[in-house]
Length: 87
Ligand SMILES: [Ca+2]
Image (cartoon, rainbow, N blue to C red; front, side):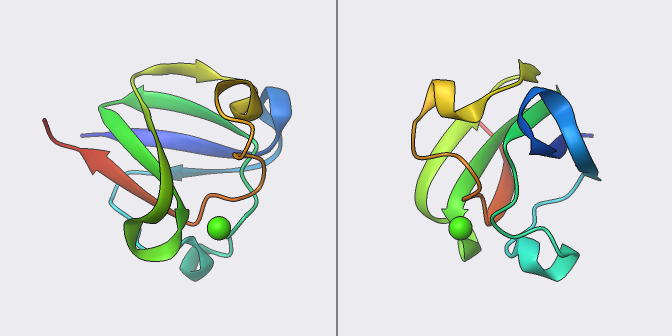
């Protein structure tokens, strides 16, 4: 099963939430526009800036990403939906 953990602050700080299913609107979990760092536990994931898998996306493989803005400067507190990528 694919899973990832979203963190409120950089370097895996603040609150966190583990997600194992495609989530089209993180608002449903009280987690819209909050994520600043991510751990991809398994699978590949697309992290979208808007709900319903719209906007701009980051696609990440398993690993630790302590500062999303180092990957893409637009990605501080913008993630609104996440989807496991099936290649
Ligand atoms: Ca957003």
